[in-house]
Each structure stands twice: as structure tokens, then as C-alpha cells.
Image (cartoon, rainbow, N blue to C red; front, side):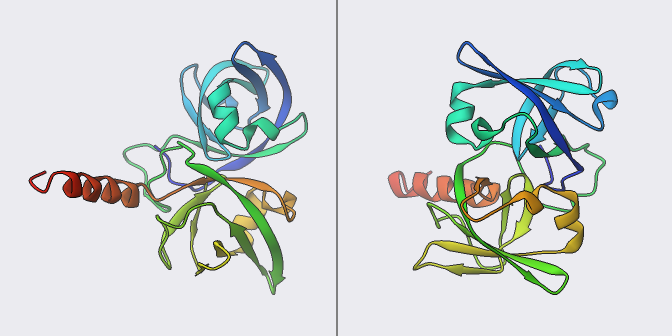
Length: 201
């Protein structure tokens, strides 16, 4: 479980194809604090630490993970957002983020506005979004500023703090971003669907 508050960025050292997927080696600033088997959100996707070598962490990605996320597009030199799994004693400054990517979206535009930046992202589904609701974009917990249901686009305002601590400065129109819908919204939909099938549920 994560909060969507990115701790820092890391750099992909290399990627190696393996059976049914790929092995990524990422330079992680907090690698010395990790152990094999720990969970780390990489661009919002929960990955398991397989090996730690000289300040870098090795993650094995399945074909399924590469297919439904943007991680398959990472190459040597690519930056990625990093967050360790939250502790039960941590303050939840963002929102509940599982690290299980639902789908990807397309960055439509980035507009500097004073010290802030306005991002517009086209998404394939609007079922789980509400005005001022939460969403994780590449592992960053964001508040939806507005929804364009005609174009299927979401608007976000990015503060200087978030801009400087994440990979967002590397974005450009057309960038593919990982999306995780609000967990509570997905549970509510599942509950209501069960009630429609069986009113006694």
C-alpha cells in the first residue's frame, strides 16, 4: 500500500529481456534501506525488490505488467517516480494507492501558469472520476481539478513542490502515463454491481 507521495526519482540503469518479461535495474537513492522482497512503487506500479547491487535495485517485470502499464517504454536513462510502501504509523498525506495500475492515459498538454503547471490527460474511462476526486498518475496522488466529459480529459494543477520532486518535467504531449483509479470508487462500483445482480447481497 502506498500514499501517492513520491519520495524521489530514480534512473533506469539498464533493462534486460527475460522469459515472460524483463529485468530492470534502477538507481534508487534509498536502496541501502531496502531488503529483498520489499515493495517499491515505480511510476505507480508496485514492484518487488529482487536484488540490490551497488546502490541499484533489480526488479523483474512480467509480460502482463509491461502490457498494461507504461513501464515497457522505460529505457536506460529513463527517470521514474519512486515510493516505498507506507508504514502503518505514517500519515496518509495522499490517498490509498495499491500500486496496481488500472490503465494508461495520454498527456494532452502541459501549460506553465505562474509557478504552477496545468496538465491535461486523456483517459479511456471516466467511471471512477469525480470533480475534486483523487487519482494516481505515475504514482503521484493528484486531485482532479476539472473533467471534460466530451473529450474524456482530466485537468490537474501541479504545485512547484510536486513538479520538482517527480518526473513531470520530462513529460511532453503524447507521453503515456500510468493511471490508478481511486480504490474506494472501485469498491463501491463492485458492491453496487453485486446488489444489482442479487438485491439481497
